[in-house]
View 1: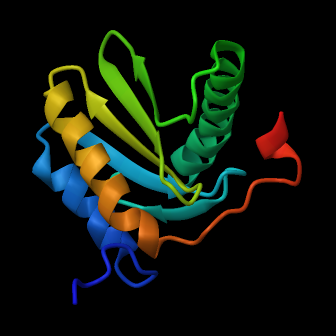
View 2: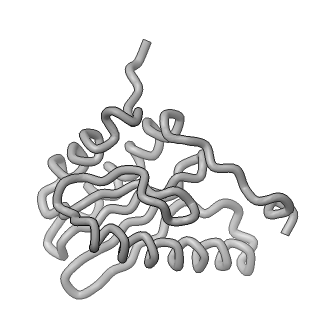
Length: 138
């Protein structure tokens, strides 16, 4: 049996591992779809986590709107490129949101791989967040 990647006991450790594996990674957090912090790596304080939660909710809404307008299927990832940093935002199959911040010198491909790997492995171990009634029919 494969051990769970992201149970309540080891989610922070799994997020720390993402940050440790990619040079230039600054932090990783998992949020519920409504922006509640589920887990965080080291390198992010409570104030920054609260700001990030609010911002990620906006990114999620923007991504979902793009999916509807473009008939794009499901939202998988949003990447924000800044002059000195990147923010990766990926939705797990159960609705949880992984957000990772990396500095501008980090290998974007390596982080994209780590995000995809975490989403594939940890999704089954995170809480399931149901869509609001009628959301699937919009």
